[in-house]
Amino acid sequence: MQGWRRRLVFVSCYEGLAIVCSSWGLAQMSGDGLGHAGVMGVASSAIAVLWNLVFNALFERWEARQAVRGRSFARRAAHAVGFEGGLLLFFVPLFAWWFEVSLWQSLVMDVGLLVFFLVYTLVFNWVFDRVFGLPASAAP
Image 1 (tube, one colour):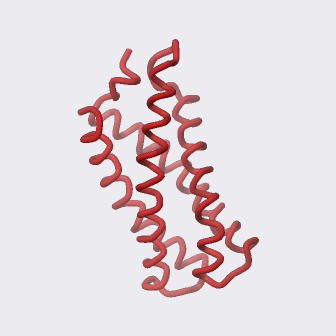
Image 2 (cartoon, rainbow, N blue to C red):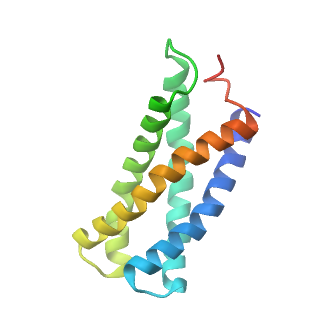
């Protein structure tokens, strides 16, 4: 599976599980109810979907120009760090506003999610590639 079809399946699977995990995590960290945190889980998922589409398209464009093909652990880790770093810029002010906490408290909340999602992103990408095969940009 290649191109936009691959990205659509990837984003749907990734974000469906991410909404459940992030809603629960935000509820635990904020002390707010699951309903209130769930709204932010869905909103952050929508932001993440858009960022995912943009970031993965840019990453695959960069990846296609690399002399070394395939997806090593280092390349997968760079992908995860780049993706999550971009989300950090979106979510810190958004969480501070929604949960009515300081930017510092929001950063701590986001770092908690970031640590979880760094591992989640790395593992999810590996499993996804094992199930659906590598994209053309990474094929040996």
